[in-house]
Image (cartoon, rainbow, N blue to C red; front, side):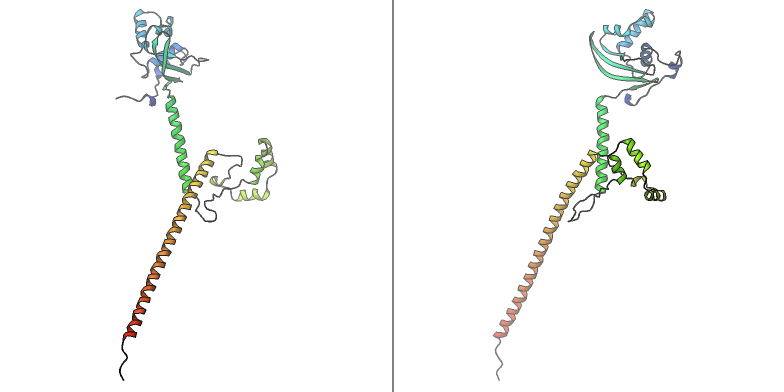
Length: 279
């Protein structure tokens, strides 16, 4: 059964405890530590080179492993070059070597405080960010659709947007230090008393006047335009249905009048055709 290495975190406490300071203090130790993890490919060039080093009985410190890897082709692991080599962070690159001078990075791994992780790819990062953004947009659209105002012929769809309080509007024209001083030195006694008696809830707090979210503004504008068009179309349909109903009622009324008139005419004709009684 294949294991998804994206969800694997590997750590070897016994390896770290055997070190003098309990840290990976060199690039060679970092690569040795990584070789013991499940991320390491046992068929890589590093594994073959370490096998040769084992049978040659030469000290590992005398080998320049990265330079020796240039003699091989295939998968290899090297420690990425950083500006500094901190003992708590190492980056391992998995590369495919096609010639002594040509390599291509396939994956990256992090060794952070002795924990080994597989770094996500750029595609995975962008995919997660896009999924998060679309989920947030869908949630915002659903919330706006549930809270949309009712349509009226006078105002159509009008959103009741709260105006910022005077203190916030005045503070938006001042610097952060000046606004803080103005709010602190010039409090409103009546407002302060009301706030002490009835503290506002979090959901009732006013939004700062200087805060502007263009994404939310465009969403509101789009929903307002769409709902206005739907309301106009629904109003036109209702008007057409009412007119058709009136026409149908008028036709029925006219037909009833014609029937009544026909009956009267037949009654009159019958009365005129009846002979008068003989005296």
